[in-house]
Image (cartoon, rainbow, N blue to C red; front, side, top):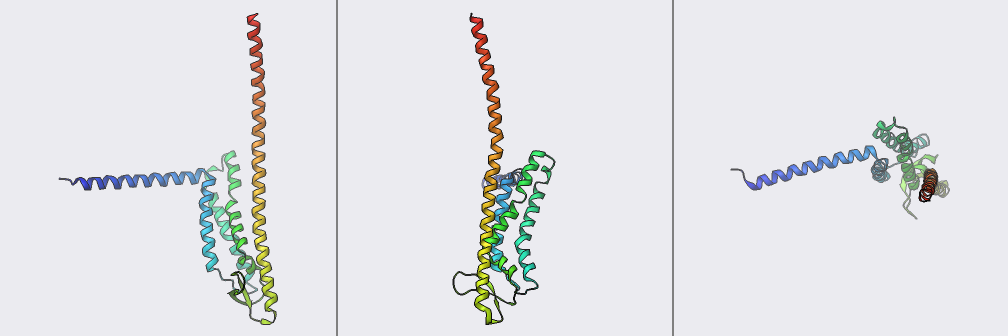
Length: 222
């Protein structure tokens, strides 16, 4: 004889598996069909990745490697995320309207990553550093990391220069964010303006046809 409680447990586990399967299929469908959803997911991943990299990042403090090392951290994760976005929506490249959406949403992960890393500042400062030293945290002021020079004769000058690079990097980050907001607003205005004109053009023939029908009905009454 089958235990009723075990049957209920089996049915509950089966329903749970079905719900999980449906959720995964819906999530995959949204990621493939909605650039907004996929950009949100990739944005969350990039934010978490930047937090991890921020803790683990260590500039080599070697003039021969600083520029290359810092540039890799500045661009490579964002480019990889943008390529991943293109692979997710690769089936939409054949449709002209969807290709327009894809071309606009493809660079979004790269732009998001650039904003994050430029606002952080240490990657840009590492790429600009042209002296040897060791990568340490500044004790005074905000907790910033920099290449402390082995030659202490120009210590304060190079610390001030590093802080200037931090400021420049954050200015670049806010500048990219501002440009993106302005471009998005301009794009939305350009997209909605033709629609409004089309609606007005459609209303004018409707008004004309309505007036003709009114005149025809008045003539019939006469």
